[in-house]
Length: 377
Image (cartoon, rainbow, N blue to C red; front, side, top):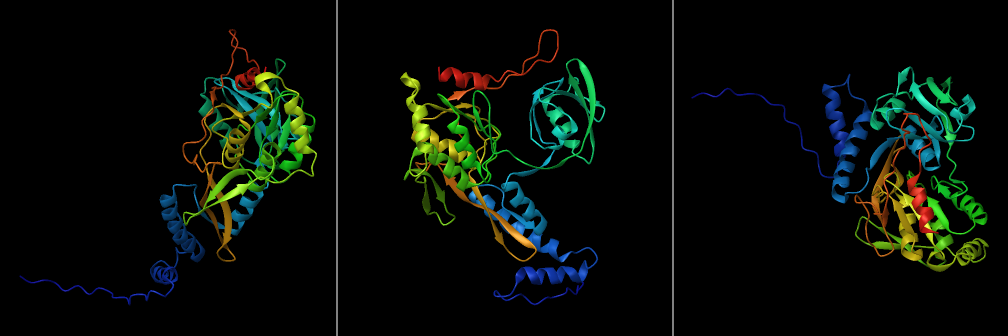
């Protein structure tokens, strides 16, 4: 039996101390020189390493970012968003109820008003669509100019709205609660002012709060817990942990403001705090409510939180590539993890959208808020 001899190219093996990624890039460039972008190859190689680390830790997604992506990440952490500047409640199969408008956002500047009902986007009506299909249509319309068909007081209006950058209001207030939208820069000061105007029991709305800056969340939690309390822990990649301590605010009148509000309540409700949460409550927002639950007996109302326990940070790799790391896990004050499973509320309440018998749109009832109010009566 005869065998044909096939000549195979033989390449010298890289020594252990050589740059393996660089050698692989050089080798591939010889055969794919027209299709290979050096920066993209480096990014893909490092991303493969990060994917391996993520599988080991089970935490959030670590990523390789370009300079532009890194700058976007920093802007996002600072509370800067790009979009229409509005939040809506879904009336399934009928429309999107405009719940809040960001001051100065493109929706407000274009003429939309709170309590408007968006019934179509770019001539695509919401009639008969599921909630998921409605939100998909809204996100797909995220283009230079979008036409909103809006129902207001039985009249139909059309607005052309362009997406733009806007700053999230970290803290807003209503007659019944304080809404912490995001833990961006200045959250502590804004929460301080909101609490000074608060009377009676405290309802904090953290629904759809995606997190933000751990420092701001720690300062905000310190208002309620007092100084030298363990708010949580950092679990480092090497298995060691370090406590995250509350800040001494004794020189500030804010702690006294909270104490005054607590003392003004009577009976079992004295000092009560209710936190509204849902699947959009994530990251340092979960850290914040877990600290208040442990130290202040805060009652969580709503749905289970997202279960995102990774603390994200940026590490420069080159002038053009940056690592967004998610390998530090946040734990609650007794070193328990909420990663993946989330925080389960003591009072589980699913939101229900309300439609009149005649099929006309009515303002959605916030039954989670109603439950919070009942708990403090």
